[in-house]
Length: 392
Image (cartoon, rainbow, N blue to C red; front, side, top):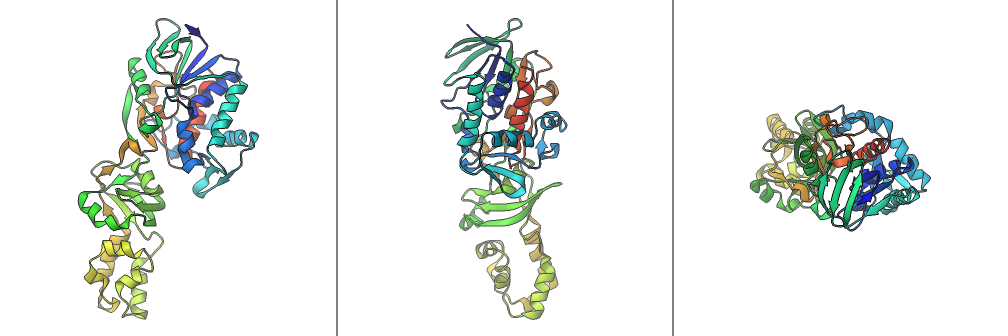
């Protein structure tokens, strides 16, 4: 039986951050992971450049059954704290749209930062380690694994969610939560592309690769970014964002011209160029292939002088209040995160410790806290890992 102070399951963002902080306090820490390499999701994130945080972090950027739960961790270890750590290691970075921060070179820089900090504080990382059994017969946790037996006073579950199975995602963390009596919030794929209904898929089959700046909304939530037509359906940042809020079977609303008073524009063009065809005028605002897919050829070939104001209003409804009911999502295969997870009400928001089992902690994606696209989920990993690392 290998004796240690802290056992962390999951060698990625949250788990490594927790290990570093516990190691700083002189705790003996071992990190166990069933993957053959640490930080696989870090390496693939942000197109290989790791969108490691965001300038604008707040509770409003997260979804949870308990919307206040994330506030404590996010306020105690902020985006500025992680940026300072990145700067300490001399990693060059830059800001993209909406406050998103990326490495200049490679996501490997962030992973190497974490592994270097782990080495500095003598954190042991054991890979290719399958967890076979977890027990707590008394005050200590006992783990039986493919690499031997481990015993420790603190057990941290940082095993992530179900998104991207090829990155070794598994329901392990949820099973441990249930084993020790913790409720779960229902899980589903989030930040994920939509698939289309069969008739819509056929209608838009020729639009693969077309991207349009749009305002996409569902109920009272809206995001303004690009949408992208794919061979399966719809993707792009605005679609990924709204997917976390979407309810199956209900329509989303897409405004393809969010800054345009389209009726006034068409009316003015009708006055100045009455013989211009509708397809020519709309083709100056939107990709022509998209215009052709949304309207009948007879209408598109009509000169503006033959169109009424009511027809302009119908055209405006189609382009700026387009109601589309997705067929579903691409699921966990391409989802960036998992919505739902370990119920926050069973955890301390200050330490991430279980309210039911002393010494048991849940951090990162396994918890029912899901961020927007744009570095928010990494910041939750850093923050939740940091606060747990202060007490484990």
